[in-house]
Amino acid sequence: MTVRQIVGECVALCCAIMLGLAAGAVWLLPTVYLHRPLPWLAIPAGWLLGIAIRQWVHGKKWNAALLAAFATAVASVYIRVLITTVTIAAMTDYGLLAAARTAGWSMLLDFTRLALSKLDVAWSLAGIVVAAVTATRRRS
Image (cartoon, helix red, strand yellow):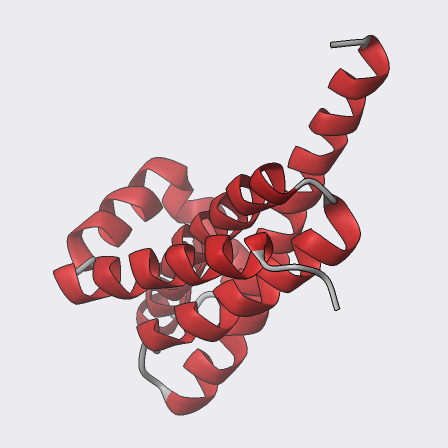
């Protein structure tokens, strides 16, 4: 591998992470609006991330599949942490950022782990599979 290829793969990985974080933040909107977690949204999020990664981030089939699966995993973890942060903010009457700063990453991750169910993990895995399969499909 040349330096150019390594830099290109690192940029693609950063793009996948940013797309996953953006998908998690967008996923938070209907979750907060409906006042309940919506783990089944991992399927459409994975589908959209698979399309986005394949179209704009990476043209190679298997690299795009890995990046799309990783981006969906990032989105699934990020939405769980955001839901935990929103719950803490609602309980303590703090703002969202103040609750996140006060709780800290270790407490947020512990509460997220405690609130995680097997069904949430199943929906996330299904979204990851959908993302990988969508990213391996040919461009239209």
